[in-house]
Amino acid sequence: MIEKVVEGAGIGEGWICVNISIRSIETDGFTGWVEQVLRRDPALAARLTFELSEQGVMHNEAAAAGFARAVTAAGARFALDNFGIRRDSLALAQRLHPAYIKLAGAHTNSMVSNSGARFYAESLIAAARQLDIPVIAQNVEDEAMFHAIAGLGFSGYQGNLGGRPSPWPRKA
Image (cartoon, rainbow, N blue to C red; front, side, top):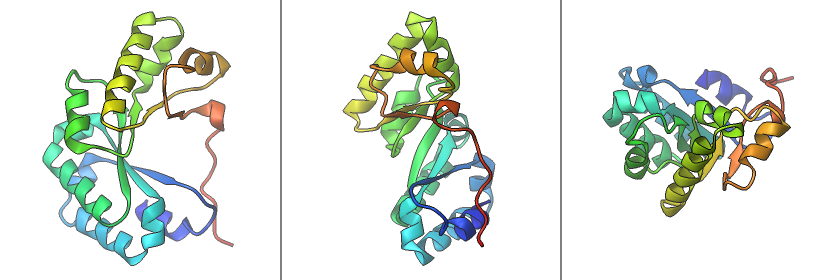
C-alpha cells in the first residue's frame, strides 16, 4: 500500500494519511524501508501521516515508538487512531506525542444521546490540549452527529459528512 501511495502522491494536494498495522511494524526491515522511502522524497514525507491504532500500539509500544521516531525523523508525521478505548490512553499519548489523535468511533457514535460520552470527549480534548495534541472525531456521518460534537473542542472530524470514500486517483 505504501508503494501505491508513493506512486500516486503526485496526484492532488494535501495530507495523505495511511493506517499501518502493528504487524507491519513488527516485520523485520519494514520500519527501515519506510524511512528510506521517506528520505528519498522529502516533499512526499512532509505530506504523509502514518496512523496506528491505539490497540496495536498497546500490543507493542516499543515497536510503535520506534516506528514513530523513524518516520518523524524522516519528515513524516504519526498519529493515534481509534483512541480512547483504554484507561491509560492519555498516558500513551503523553509518551508518544502524536501529531493528532482520532477519538474512537464508538465514543463519537454515542454523543448524540449520551451526556457521559460528551463529558468524556470534552475531558479528553482538554487534557490533549495541555499536551498540544489535536483531537479529531471519527464516524461523523450526518448533521445530527456534527451538531452533537460541535462546540466540544474537536480540531476536526472524519466521516461521510465530509465526503464519501472514493477510489485512489490513477496517474494519467
